Image (tube, rainbow, N blue to C red; front, side, top):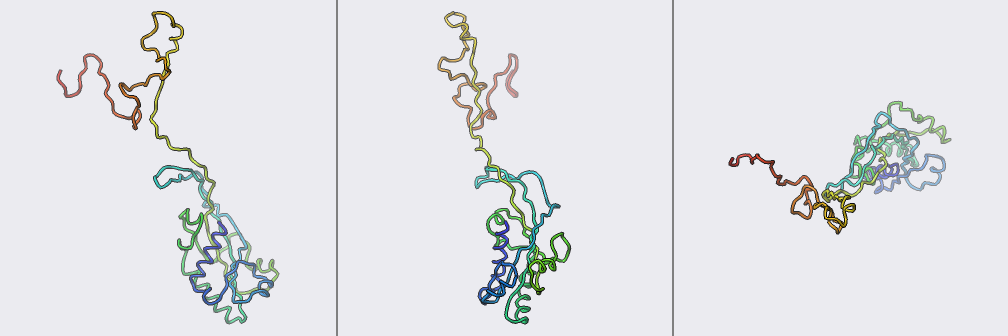
Length: 246
């Protein structure tokens, strides 16, 4: 899921025309090493924190269907995580950095969620909204000042971007659907005790072991509807069909 969010952010920034102007989008940490080896204006989208949104946690499973509507598996409910990104720009002059940072900010605030056209993999398959937010509240993740201090670099203008994305749950495959009707076979076990005598029951099981089909008369199979199929039932003595003659 994390790499799919990275790719979605890259595609979203690419739609703003940054690659056409020679601006690179990387996911490296904004350190002095990045500044030393870059060869073009660069936008760094650095992932520095991951936190689960426990308020969205759910239980249960969701059925998955194929093109014919048949259940092929069950997937646990997704769990939601907040991904914190530190977005910075790197150019040769502060004025150019501020201009480029403003373009990136305009791109990220133009939408409240990642458009479906930039989602790939499991994010596209789930069909859930992946929210975007410019952080302005405390959520338990490290502060931007702490991040810069940990990186060992000097503080720079940056955008604290938060992405709320679902992590797919574990999938359990389902067995094949039942397509055959129910058939019940019986066998008269008393036939063996009366073998060789004239007192064997007339309704004993056939010798070929095929048994007898219950509740179906004159049919080889119960049909596609199984025991739910309509059938004629003999009436008890003295009863008549509704609407029939006495």
